[in-house]
Amino acid sequence: MIDADGFRPNVGIILANAEGEVLWARRARGGGGWQFPQGGIQRGETPEQALYRELEEEIGLKPDHVQMLGVTRDWLHYRLPQRLVRRGRHPVCIGQKQRWFMLRLVGDESQVRLNASPHPEFDGWRWVDYWRPLDEVVAFKREVYRLALNELAPLLGHTPREPVPG
Image 1: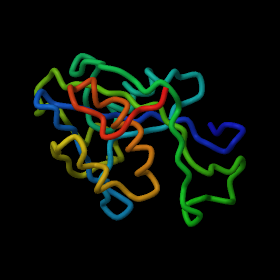
Image 2: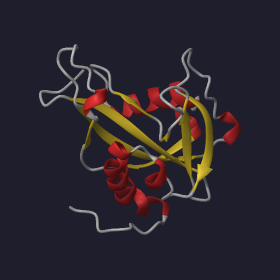
Image 3: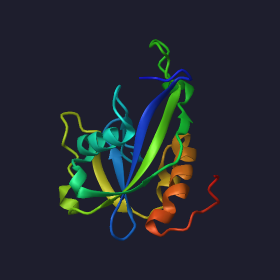
Image 4: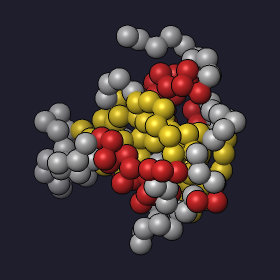
């Protein structure tokens, strides 16, 4: 599903532990880069439904393992680098628009399972400082991460690094 502007609707998941650290996962494919769990919204699915489906598919957690803390007010967009745009598909997807959700793990971290789906997205994970992802995520996603982390920071008692518009 791609919108009229060429963006694929998607959800991003920031999962925090009781200490305010966030789950940082290593991609199983694509060079082993690190990122937050994320995934596409399917036709007829709300962003919240997609969040819980992706949460279970990518890291094996069910809705009762987490507490919903909040979501970004607006869609946050990023463009794919030209080398990643698949021109042979119609409509052409030039990037993603994402709603970012902040969750707190209320279950045990042993419930995190990266092999919950037949084709795991990640092959490793760790808890990291809230702001560390800004230094490690691939460059083309960095601005969306900056916006999401700044907007959602107060939900964990963190001070935004810069003013949040709105």
